[in-house]
Amino acid sequence: MNDKIMEVKGLNKAFGAVTATNDLSFGIDRGHVHALIGPNGAGKTTLVNQLTGDIFPDSGKIIYNSQDITRLKDYRRAHLGIARSFQITHIFENLTVGENMALSICAHSGHNFHFWRHSLRSGIVKEKLEGALGRVDLAHRRHLKASHLSHGEKRQLEVGMALTGDPELLILDEPMAGMGPGGTIELSKLIEKLKGTLTILLVEHDMDVVFSLADMVTVLVYGEAILTAPVDQVRKNRRVQQAYLGDGW
Ligand SMILES: Nc1ncnc2c1ncn2[C@@H]1O[C@H](COP(=O)(O)OP(=O)(O)OP(=O)(O)O)[C@@H](O)[C@H]1O
Image (cartoon, rainbow, N blue to C red):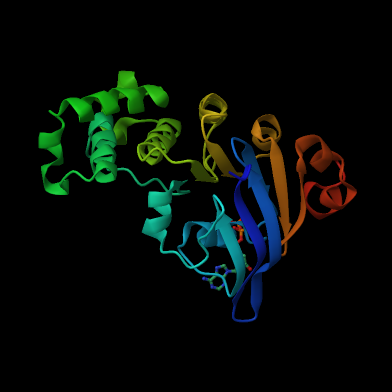
C-alpha cells in the first residue's frame, strides 16, 4: 500500500466569485500528524469539508488509501476510516461521559440506537467502553454529566467519540479553539499519545501546538497550498513568514 494515506490533486472549489480552494495539491503520510495552517479565510475548513465529503469539489481528485473518493458520500468515507472531530462540540450534555461514549460505540458497531442503554450490559460494549475512556484519559470521569466537564475535557470526550469507530485518519478541526492554557496542554498530551497509532490531520491556529506536534505542515494562502514541508522548513520559509507568520518568526 502507498505510504500516503491521502492525496489531494488539483482541487478547486469556488463559492460564486470566491475561490476557496485553488488548484490545491498535497499528500498526507500514513502515521503522521499533518498540520494544516493558514490565515483566516485561507480555505482550511472548505478543504476539510471536501475531504470528509460534506461538500464536493468543482474539480480535482481526493485519493484515500489509493481509492478515488472524490464523489463518495460522507458516511461512506466514515466507513472507510475517516473521522472528524468538529470545532463545535457534538456531545450530549445531559448524558454522562460513559453514556456519551457508549452511544458512540453503539452507533459505530451497528447496535440499535433505541436500545443503546440496554446494550451497555453487553460484554463487548463494556470492554470497548473501558478502552475508549482510557484512550482519552477520561475513565475517572465516566459517571459525571458531560455538562460538568471542563471545556478541555469536553474536547477529549469528543475526540474519544470520534475514535470509537477505529478510524485510520482523524481530522481535528481547530481542537484548541476557545481553550485555556491548561486545556491546551492536556489536549496536546492526548494528541502526542495518539501519535503513531493513526494518522491525524490537525487544523490549528496555535503555532506552538503545531510546531510541537506536527511532523509535516501544509500552508494554505488564498486557497492554495503554498508549501508542504517538515516543521523546521516551514519555520524558515521566507514566503510563509511573510504570508502568515509575520516577520517576527
Ligand atoms: N458556504 C460558503 N459560501 C460562500 N463563501 C464561503 C462559504 N464557505 C466559505 N466561504 C468563503 O471561502 C473562503 C475560505 O473560507 P474557509 O472558512 O474555508 O477558510 P478558513 O481558512 O477555514 O478560515 P478560518 O480560519 O477563519 O476558519 C472565505 O473567503 C469564505 O468567506
